[in-house]
Image 1: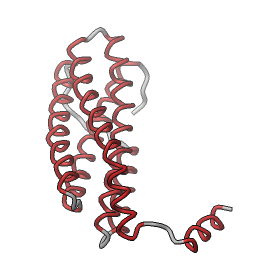
Image 2 (image 1 turned 45 degrees about the vertical axis):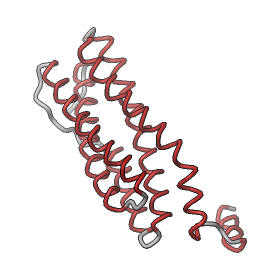
Image 3 (image 1 turned 60 degrees about the vertical axis):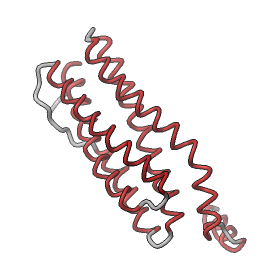
Length: 181
């Protein structure tokens, strides 16, 4: 479908983040099943509940703009979820490394969502629809808080991964250096 005006662009972006939130919810459920550290499991569980609320908020936005909720396939979300799934497979059997990989994948997702919501907020402000702005801002605030929480916990997860055999030997480091040259 061709986008010929800003309303169509807005609805496309709304459908895109609606699809992304659904994809990320499914991805979080897989991450929860793979996570081992109780603190990480708790963070994922809390964000699953937030993501479910984000979806409900987006459904309210669709209502406020007189549209039925519809998912526009989000290739960015598909790529992030695919990348995370691949990483889960590749780290299977190394729980500390898996936990760190989960945090890294979740951090990427949060920043993707932050950018998407910032764009939608700008468009909703231009439309003059404060109810829509408020719903987007609610989602954005939670995404920003989650990103901060992940980033605060990544050093601990990295240390656990490094302590569980995740450190590079000098031979591996040399091999990596040679591969990059």
